[in-house]
Length: 137
Image 1 (cartoon, rainbow, N blue to C red):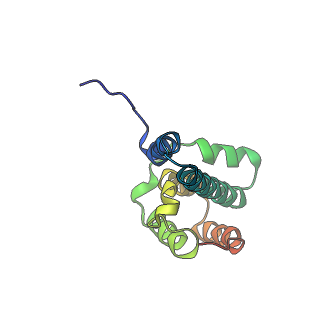
Image 2: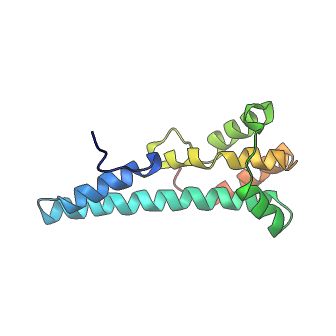
């Protein structure tokens, strides 16, 4: 068996919508799928922007910001990491909502912040500041 359409896990929804758009039988169906694609891409951009703003507000310099974005942390099993994740889920975007599932790809940033010795309270404060501007949760 030879794979024909290999797609990264996080891109499956995009690939499916692209196929639906290409194979739509009517203009209405095509418009419906294009609208779904636009909403999906907006959600992905929102998730990325929220996470990057939280990191930016939690760090002291552009260098530290870049370091946190690209670090490979191992602090996933700490009590602090779980505390920050739960706080984020309750006070910002909930990754259980299918609209925000791409959050799962960004949660490592909280571990990176903790490994960079950013205090939990500062991360929570950044979550609050960034999430205050969100209207659709």
